[in-house]
Image 1 (cartoon, rainbow, N blue to C red):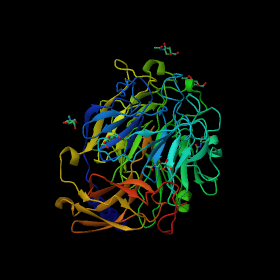
Image 2: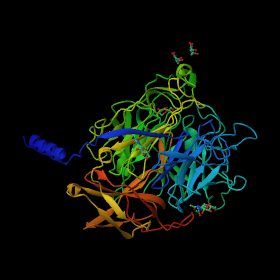
Image 3: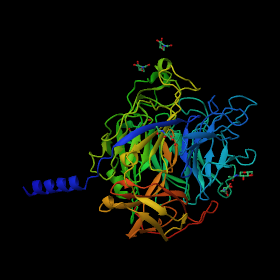
Image 4: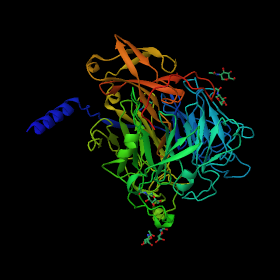
Length: 567
Ligand SMILES: *[C@@H]1O[C@H](CO)[C@@H](O)[C@H](O)[C@H]1NC(C)=O
Ligand SMILES: *[C@@H]1O[C@H](CO)[C@@H](O)[C@H](O)[C@H]1NC(C)=O
Ligand SMILES: *[C@@H]1O[C@H](CO)[C@@H](O)[C@H](O)[C@H]1NC(C)=O
Ligand SMILES: *[C@@H]1O[C@H](CO)[C@@H](O)[C@H](O)[C@H]1NC(C)=O
Ligand SMILES: *[C@@H]1O[C@H](CO)[C@@H](O)[C@H](O)[C@H]1NC(C)=O
Ligand SMILES: *[C@@H]1O[C@H](CO)[C@@H](O)[C@H](O)[C@H]1NC(C)=O
């Protein structure tokens, strides 16, 4: 009876404190002009999109068809951006001085014609201060600034010293990564002392072939890097150059390309900043089956798996949850509340250009688009976290080469989809998709009162306090107030590299919000971030801030050491 009563009380308590269900709505506005194979939020008003030179409708001033563009969130129009090398299926990150670095890409398609071979490309963009992107250009010097080896489908990760770590990739235009092994390695930009032109071979990436492209990775609060490729996981220590294997993803689920699932680091909270990763979607198909034996109707997995990267968490192992629908090529967007939106992708098939059985009919490796998103409520009890409540159904298929990213306005930009190796207009089952949609929460749709950040610092130093002037609408003041420091990531192929949310310690007195920056550069690798204020589940627009001293990488340790449970 006692147990029953306490269960009842607990249920009531959970019921009372449960978040309001946000009603989301899709609004279509504008066309992207290029396919945003890669989408990165770069300022309050601009998104950067990288594609391939593909016969896109958008043209550069010289008449050349564009393969990159800046998307203006105010006008819903793209402005072409030129680059020297081919940006197709590159990876990247912001580094400690605020420059966005994009690395690698595809081989040259037409000899003698732009773009140049992108596989060793290093492209530097910004910071871009102009709200419309005037004079913001991609800087490249391929003869002098390039990767050590050719790569395609690599991951870019900003590490605690603020430089870029480049992970893996492929070398061959095939479904599986069966090519030479030089790219099964790590390298850095700028190079580590004595490592210019050299790579660090990775046994882990080699073992993860042939499903090891775009390895999912995240910097842990210990400064080490957690990685998943195929169904394998490990922790890499950058200093000692050692790989430490952790348990495989359960049930044969694989999440790197071409079996793309998605990974997010769940919010880090003071004082312990215990890291938990969430992995959703992908495929549990046997990776020994040749591509021609896989089919567009093979079911994707509905599995989400979660692992806490502490000694106790790893001993407990991967905890499994189920999505209402299976998904391959699912995108995950961490919201300022700490919840995770799961959207785009398909219920069956695979990533990559048509190569599996049945794709000759659909011209797509995937079929049965997932038109409706799902919300992962991070702080709800296990088994009750994932639902489609409040989420609308789109009528636009978002398959291979589609993306979704949080914007500075606090909504989600959803764009792209092109399962074809060229621009293919309708009529075809899954045409090249240029239509841009926003997924808006009800408080944006209905213009309801939101927290407003009136002024915020443009830079915060580790472990230091800073103040913001804010207004919290009176109807939201009784709810929980959170301050989120977010890296929105470099979005491509279901991976949101560098995506990170750190809840900041704060006090609110009147309209003055005093925050404490993350304790050190392992908790938030130094570089650009966005501050959002969340009151009773309703978030403000984001304020852009530089975290750390803003200098060129590598930066020495910043802030204070704290005691941690993180591996
Ligand atoms: C689309 O965006 C433009 C530019 O911001 C705006 O004027 C227009 O009202 C928007 N249309 C819809 C349907 O939201
Ligand atoms: C852009 O660059 C040109 C040439 O350097 C300069 O004349 C112009 O003022 C710049 N515009 C802005 C908005 O910075
Ligand atoms: C991971 O995949 C390999 C084959 O690629 C398989 O042998 C192994 O059993 C898988 N691990 C789990 C836990 O399913
Ligand atoms: C895949 O291979 C298995 C085993 O040889 C076979 O039974 C199956 O029909 C094949 N499927 C396709 C689509 O080729
Ligand atoms: C697709 O391939 C299958 C198996 O080889 C074949 O039966 C079918 O006719 C092909 N369809 C088209 C449209 O080429
Ligand atoms: C940022 O650092 C990189 C690496 O040293 C450098 O190439 C780039 O020019 C720097 N960006 C700015 C804006 O100074």
